[in-house]
Amino acid sequence: MALVAGFVLAALNLRPAIAGISPLLDEIMDDVGLSPAGGGAITTVMVVCLGVFGPVVPLLARRIGLDRTLLAGLLVIAAGVSLRGLDGAPMLYLGSALAATAIAVMNVAMPGVVKQHFPSRLNLMTGVYVSSVVAGAATASALVIPLEHVTGYGWRGVSALLAVPALLAAVLWLPQARRGRAGGQEGPRPIGTVLRSPVTWYVTALMGLQSLTFYVMLAWLPTIFLEAGVPADQAGYLLSLTNLVQVGTSLAVPVLAGRRSSQVPYVVGAGVLTVLGYLGMLLAPTTLPWLWMIVLGVGQGASFVLALLIIALRPANPATVTALSAVAQSVGYGVAALGPMVFGLLREVSGGWSVPLMAGLGVLAVQIVAGSKAGRPATLGR
Image (cartoon, rainbow, N blue to C red; front, top):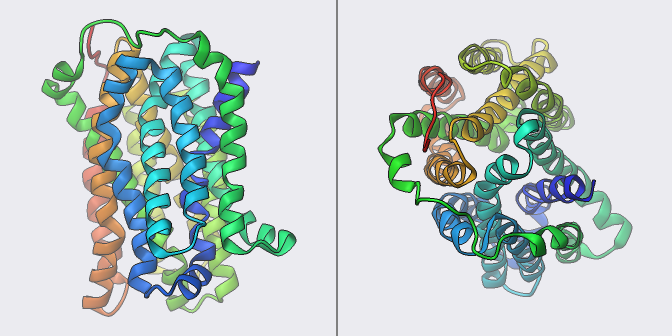
């Protein structure tokens, strides 16, 4: 029970440091004296860190073990969110980068942790992991403003409060880290095998492209609806709705998809649902917008959890899971970091959202093709 509780609480800490910035961004920019570009750079720096620092995880896992790597990540998240609440823009960016680096490490380590500790419940625990990640993001974005009002601490104090759940998760995970193998992961180094396999690059494409379309919606969805004539409060609720839908989807889909040797029907179906969500925003954004957001949430939530499930299923052992996760998430988040900026440029050049949304449909078409390859039965590192 303590193992599961520590695992779930660790997963809940994987998004609040990022999702908690957006609701406070105007206040942060005013207080620190940042331009809109400087404010947007906070999230950009964090997403870039998600891609850049993933490759160090196989080395850490081999040296100190997955359990101790996860514990270190939780402690560094706590340090990062505390640091960015100090005076000055340098501390803001440094603390954000530090927290994102820890999240990058934990992102890559978590599929290996699932494979190592829950091999007989891999499908269920992958769903629990992803739904906890989504729930952590939704909770942080919803609560930072109320917490600011209740405590009177301002954005700096609220940022520091995000260290509390990370420290609590570290306390729960500490016994597991102490029991972990001092020598880390055993067996041959799997990175060469992973890099030579076409499966790796199909999985990487799936991970990167579904992340790109998700971060585009996270950054621009309210603006798309606002410019279509939807009231501001409703535009915010629509973003919350699509994120909440992903929680339930993340629990159900891996249990069903993991029972089959091939996940192709699920990956293609998730991509098609995401396409329908994009088409709804493109063709009829003010007609049943809540329906488009439910469809989009199911599609994006399923795509994310399926990418992580495939990362956990394809390798034969936890060390290879960590290697595949490092490649797929590092390259994937590097690609995803470009999405919001490119879509913003397309909006600026074209004068509307039709061209960016059509570009998104093109990305989704490639995602479906890559997913149909990644979802086929295969084994890495046997």
